[in-house]
Length: 334
Ligand code: PEP
Ligand code: MN
View 1 (cartoon, rainbow, N blue to C red):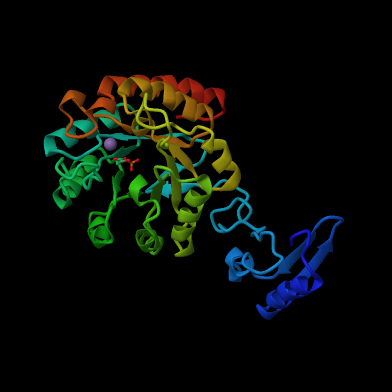
View 2 (view 1 turned 90 degrees about the horizontal axis):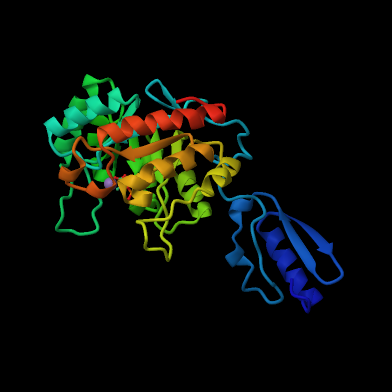
């Protein structure tokens, strides 16, 4: 309450809290009076109290995200994609092209991803492009191409879902790990739908989303019953223009403290240039990330999308080698 709040104003707040079915605890300090509401916090919002005369401000004490919070689950959770654990001692590198282009390209990419020692493959069939006149992805055909290529090397597939109407098709193609992209982090209807299915989900961070907003978005998925969620930092937008986005390495320890769920890093969309990818990847693993989502193309110069940031197969193999040392140094393995 304000310093100048009257007893009558304090009583009104107390009455309102009681009327809403909560207990009240009043703490009278020398300068301030703090009124605590005791009970189910989800029933109360700051907007119910902020406009009342005498109120300085009101806030939730307990975190708004519950299922995803470490408070609710102290141990690290491991999300299994088929039989591959993400979030345990082993670090998982998910590699593949930005986009599914042709069967030949995906067959070759799958072979190269497997040869480099990666256990999962990425590739977008539905692409969220900034420019509506550029390649928008191969769509449903792309999913089938991806499935065929990845099955030859027994690689689970990771691909982006942009539209609820495609969810059944994703399930028919048995997409192993559904990616919710940056631009859809707060598409709450989409989050609710993937919350109702039994498939692991990668939730990328929104372009300018705070960590709290990101955790709340994950809670939307978890609230529907699907707790198989992997956070993916892919760089955030700042004033810097020297690279595509700023990789927020700081979010790794913060998320690790706030949530029990796995955290992976996409160094490709962060840096936006292939030559930045190894350094960002090493930083991410050293900081405690559980894995990476990396773009690799059999022939980057020919890529239909994000050509600048794609590693070539040789660079992916070298990256895997250099990450082994870092993983070992922090008591993990690749
Ligand atoms: C992607 O991973 O292909 C992609 C489009 O990423 P983001 O949503 O992070 O931009
Ligand atoms: Mn891309």
